[in-house]
Image 1 (tube, rainbow, N blue to C red):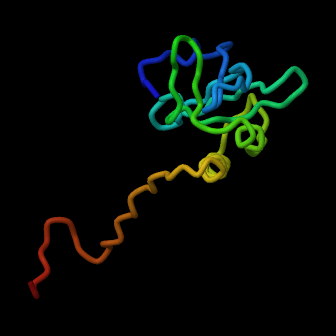
Image 2: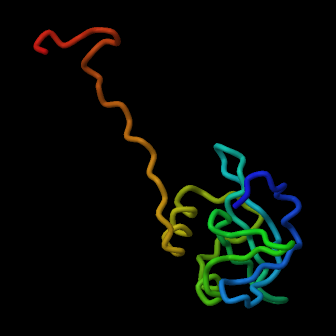
Length: 124
C-alpha cells in the first residue's frame, strides 16, 4: 500500500474484496509499532457484525475505496481480536498466517559472545 497515505483519511472509506464485493467500512487503522506505517485496517462488515482485520500491504486505495486482494469469506473468518486495543505481535502473526502472507522474520541475534570487538581469531 502507498505509505504516503494519511491513515486518518482511510477511516470511513468503503472496502471491497478481490471480486469487487463490498466488505464494509473502515473503522480503524493500526500502525506498525516500529515504523508508524499503516499496517492493518479494521473493517465493519455489517450493521451488527464485528470488525475484521485486513492487511494494508497487499491492498490498494483505488478511487477512494480500499481494494483488498482476498475473498470476502476469508476476511469475515479472520481472527477476532476486538477493536480499539493494541494488536500484540502474536495476534499479528495469527492474522498474517490467516491470510497466507509470508512475513520476514527478524534477523537472528548476534551470538558471537566469545570474541571481543576488534580482535581476530589467532587460528585464522
